[in-house]
Picture 1 (spheres, one colour):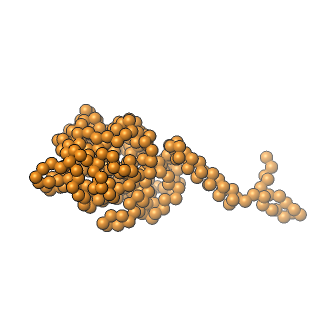
Picture 2: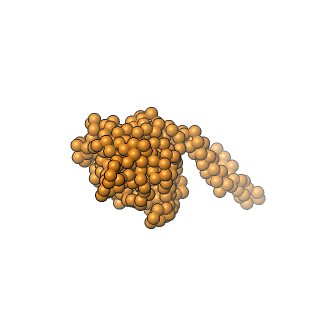
Length: 300
């Protein structure tokens, strides 16, 4: 086929096509198609390891993404793009591969009592499975061993004394690849408190800044964008909805298994919030044995 990119007049070659303009037009078309897929919830995400293979080079994908985040270099990254993380077998964690998607970018940048740096929120596509002494019904996890959603005299934040968070920090985090652990930024939030020395409380009684560590469950606000069953104010005053959860279908993207939230129920001294396997906001007694965790983290 003839090359129509140039023509010649009296021996002088002249360009017929504007390569820069064509590349710009192609980029705009690609971006518009991504926006269209995102709007209709049809975007399936891309493997970051594959799409950016030449840029990543010999560096592991976790360190590469951490460096990207720390330098606020989010060019080309999309909500829903993913990394497949191999999770090692442990006493209470079965070997499994968890698809972690970009759920938000700089969601809490400069926020908090100590300003948070640039970061990327990573959210599992589906709830993860549990095994061993902490598992219930073979592969699920109780929020707590007792039907109590209050904190204690030593730790007033209910979530921080939950079996759920204990498993996240002491079992799941060590099972992640070392390079990934090193790329994770610890999360610190304004976390609800619920404790009285004289009685069990049915509403959260305050809040305070608290470290969640490197792995944590999302709050009701981060999933739904509003309080549903949690305490108005104290349970949602800092958090905001992750873009990955902009529609109901996104809550069951990886299947129809229910998963726990870190929020406790308002109007109750004995229930914790969860996302039902059918996509709606729900709550159960902490000892309910048919709900799984959805351990999230920040890269940064």
